Length: 300
Ligand code: HEM
Image (cartoon, rainbow, N blue to C red):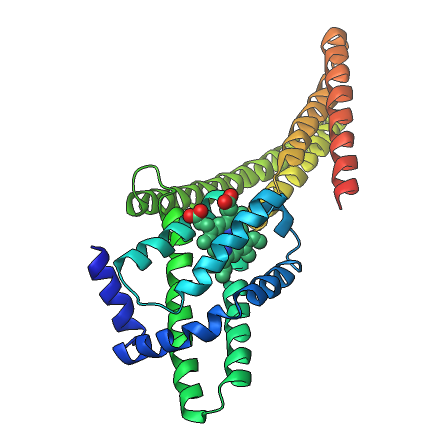
């Protein structure tokens, strides 16, 4: 498996025997600068805002510096199965400490420019310089690929059953929820039609001569119509992607229903007890509605 992987990297990045020889030829130059490299690398890591979260104490820093020096020297050596496993181990170590992959990408970019500057300053032969830069580029690309593959593997492993099954389940759940929302819109539109009918019946009551009852009931029906409009609007907004949760509207629905009931019972003189109950309910719902409005306003 490791052999197969190694061949895949060699083929995909075009790393030839020629490149490997060039890298080995560069080794003494790079080894001579390994201490300076570590200093420059650590200078570069200072810009990472939470770098100290990972390189948290002197012990870890010294251990990392030693490990990094070994990595730098191995960069200019043969690419074999052991080296592949070694890089996978580094990737795993970074994932284990939770190091952001962005830091690894940025560090490799730094190593590229550090080595490029060194080659440009130290190698006078133009064609040799070109060969060195090409081989170095391929080797760093392979390193980056392997070091970041551990992050992708970790991401892929974060599944309970399997990526495919869970993907299908999530997409089904999303469609189902969208279907239910559509059903809710139909239901609300149907409710709107019924409230309109109620409004018509209440208006007819006025013309039948029962003016007081008719006017109060019509007022109640109009309030209900207003609430249904709010509900339809909120649901349509939700379907169009707004995240707003309509809990306040539902409190509004209850509020309006109580007001309507109160208006109707106020016509009956024998319903005093029921009216007190409705007044208390109205007070509580009104308070909840007001608190929610305050909360909404402070969030905005
Ligand atoms: C080119 C980029 C990097 C290379 C080649 C590299 C190399 C290594 C190596 C060889 C190890 C030891 C792995 C092992 O124990 O098996 C290691 C571990 C670690 N690296 Fe890096 N590293 C890089 C970038 C970074 C950066 C930018 C940070 C933090 C800002 C970092 C933080 C760590 C930490 C915290 C550990 C574990 C140290 C321990 O507890 O021993 N590395 N790295």
